[in-house]
Image 1 (cartoon, one colour):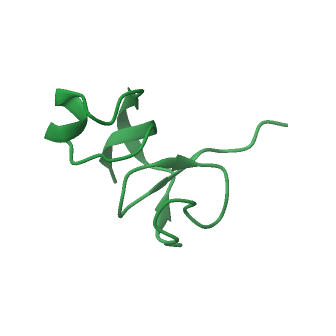
Image 2 (cartoon, rainbow, N blue to C red):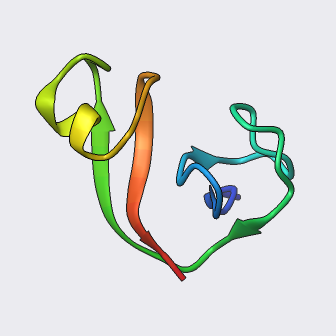
Image 3 (cartoon, rainbow, N blue to C red):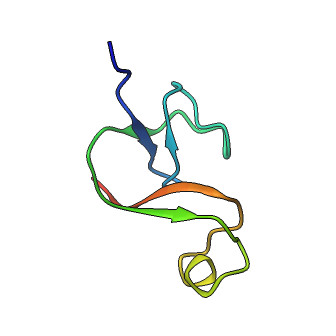
Amino acid sequence: MVKRMHVCRNCKRFTQEKICPVCKSSNLSISWKGLVVILNPDSEIARALNITEQGRYALYVG
């Protein structure tokens, strides 16, 4: 069985846990749109989205 991916409403990071591993929030959602993968936190895209760590992030969290 595949685990459902959750997205943190605070930092928009994807997780399979019940608590966000980045910001330690439990405010998670399964409703999201768009996916961006940040490999280099110093990139222009990461700066535009205010992302400081590598990972998978949602563009919109419902």
